[in-house]
Structures are given as C-alpha cells and as structure tokens.
Image (tube, rainbow, N blue to C red):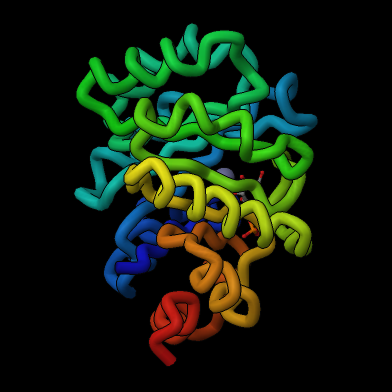
Length: 216
Ligand code: DX5
Ligand code: ZN
C-alpha cells in the first residue's frame, strides 16, 4: 500500500491544526514533520512543541524527520512528544545502529535517511535495525525544490538490497515529489511519499493525494 505523508513545512502555520486535519481527512495516512536545527541543514524550522501540538489534534501517524546534528540527544524528547516514527540522518551520527535500537526501545519506529550524495550501500549493515529508509530526493533544508532525478536509481538500489536480505522496511522519498514524478518513484520501490508543496499548495487536495498514490 502506498502511503502519503504531507510535509507540514509547506502548511499555513497560522492554522496548523486545521491544515493537518485537512490533509488527513483527504486520505493522507502520515503527517511529515521536518525538524531543522540551522546546523545540520542551513535552515531552522521547529521542534518538540510542534510535535506535541500535532499529537493533540490527530491520530494519524506522526512521521518526524530530524535534520539535526547529534540526534541522539533529542530522540527521547521527540518520542515523549508523540512521534510514531523518528527518522535521523545517517550523516548526523557516528553510531546509527545504536541510535536505531534506542528509538525502537522507546516504542517508536526507527527511520534512517541519506542525503543525495550519500550512497545507499552505507545502509547495508543497518537494514535489519530500521523500520523505514528515507531517500532524500533533494538536498535537505528547504521545501519547494526540484527533485534530483539521479536519486531515483538509489530507490531502486535500496529496494533490491532489501529484497536480497529479505527485509521490508518502508521506503520513503522526500523532496520535490509531485503527481508527475510519484509514479516512477513508486515503480522504483518507494511506498511512502512525502510531499509538501504539491499537497498544501494544491487547489484540489484529495485529487492530488490520489494522484500521488497513482490512483488517478
Ligand atoms: C526538505 C524536507 C522535505 C520538504 C518537502 O528538507 O525534508 O520534507 O519539506 O517539501 P517539498 O515536497 O515541497 O519538496
Ligand atoms: Zn522531510
């Protein structure tokens, strides 16, 4: 099943709760929450209180994407705030396997993400330690960028690697995803589609969510 995870980075923060309810009532299974620290990425977004606020207004899966340095310092706080999935960056920690186990021990699904320049081969030893693999299809830091087509091959590679090891973590893609390119990402092996601008700036949110799933 293909799941859609709208990135709230593109929502109207003056109506945060309504924006979340709008996309979940239109068929989005997950809510993607992009945490940026101004250090791991050159932008600052928001943090723990925003995850807590989202938890108060929805039962949808909160898919928290940590674009922060030293993620090990904050995973407990994000788990306590109500995250269902915590994804950290491979590039942000020296002990990714240990961190994934810690996230799981908090009763939360563990995700790991790679930036466009990081080869998926680094994930080979970690396949059994994670529940989700997030392939960035833009340089992390900003919404509204164009998908980097060279990342599509990485989705194919990670899917092949997972099949080879009989592992089935979710495979998520994030950055510049639109109804026009979602199909090729899904065929490559992605099953969770993050879309910020494409969903929140759409004049037909239910139609866009369906189109992202390939249902139209
Ligand atoms: C980028 C973020 C993305 C971003 C996606 O650093 O991780 O989740 O908000 O936004 P769009 O879909 O607009 O590229
Ligand atoms: Zn993201």
